Image (cartoon, rainbow, N blue to C red; front, side, top):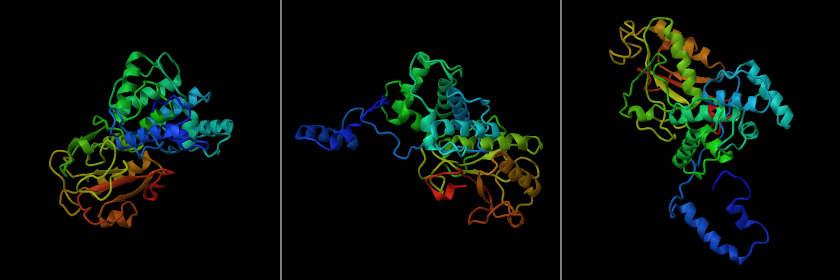
Length: 339
């Protein structure tokens, strides 16, 4: 159904005082749910507003900052959830009578995001443009103008997501767009490696996970020890990935250890036992990952016993030749990804 609001069809059918005239509508609902009517695609069943908090970075954080601006809060839009963003979030939560914790979860997202449409010109449209650029790999100007190009992009996303394609951005569109995964920028000192045969289709992850790893890669670039090999992360809309027991929720990203010749992007993957394995450089990379996402690295699976003894990595079978970085959030439906 469109984002315009009001009572849903299902609540209308089953509210007290119903009558038999609604039976025909009930049959229609059954057909819609079953996907038997033309254009009756469904939104992502697992879509939710991704909780963002201190230490996060990325497109979702940037969108939150623009939404805070739209709601009268003074905060820089830099894509980093720092102390000023925490303060702005707390001020907004106080104004709205929400729990004042500075964590932007589903309730705060919902209160922040207004319904916007063609002709609007404000910071909320900037948030929309940021999300569309990140989640749909577009290059819309982030100018706050809800132009024809923005409306076309919204309709395309709504069709992609299987929700009412009306060009109006309301709660359903905001939730599905915020939840949608992001794609890495390989100019950020990354190289694309797909050793498990999943190809570029498995490069997607949450905006926070992608941006945090990009920042670590940029930081690692200053060591002049080569690029960071980016392996499997997740599919565009989540789900099982062949060859992996996790990577379903967009917060797991595989990377490769660093070589002594800095040729990890061109000379092939190695194990921690290899003579060309550079433990010191790999340690620097792990430290950069933690520094780029303070409080949001749940663990890193990698079987180098020295790094394990230092508390930097965790042992797990079949992780001799790659590091499995698991990011986390303050609130997540899966407890394995809760910080």
